[in-house]
Length: 290
Image (tube, rainbow, N blue to C red; front, side):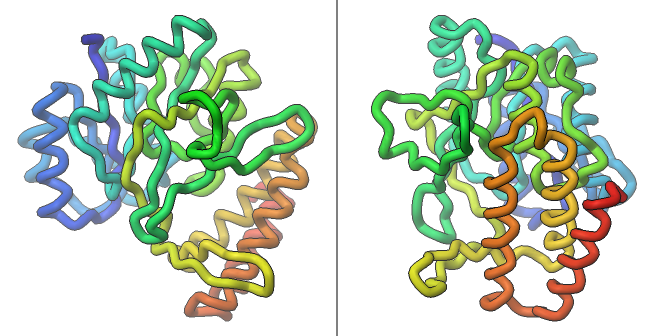
């Protein structure tokens, strides 16, 4: 089996559950890296590599730091995981097997993501797919075949090569959080790489504290993220569109629709005034790339 590393970005996780998860990962690879954005994880450093950033530097920078560390160790493959993602240890072997199979058909393979089941919504999440004139939302269970080409997946569970990650410049660390993985996917595609999602491997994940609500004729998967996330979602969405809108014109409708839909979440979430203030600040700073 080819050497691989696992990077988990931590921000004040539930210690008992998190430590048990890391112990399980350490049984299958010696290259587990926890990049810590929160309080001290001193005990964890006894069983794996812990890189403490001294405060919350954002998921974008944390993943960059983790991948660069593995690249220095000459580890060719890396899995990017969130602290709350649930999977079994067979996951890594299955994903590497899928990579090997897909790379035989497409030598430009740059990243591979699993299908995602949201444990709060109790359903499969849709995946974004880059088409010539638009970005579509597709359920993997609806497609023919086992994989989908040119998808734009979230980073949790993503498999890539450290060399490819570095070649495209990694994440845009200024973005901190939100739209970070989406931009990384498009940077890969722009550099000539293929991004695939496979439905043969599934992870258990949660996007915020998702709850389904009906708004008129539309069903909303309300994420219930912390209010501070509103700022980054709007700031980065606008920044992302201004930075990459000419390169990928499909982004215009997709991002505008995402921002509009997110604004409807406010009807169902607490701290409405705080959220509106964060949104307005995010829009302002996104226009000025602040």
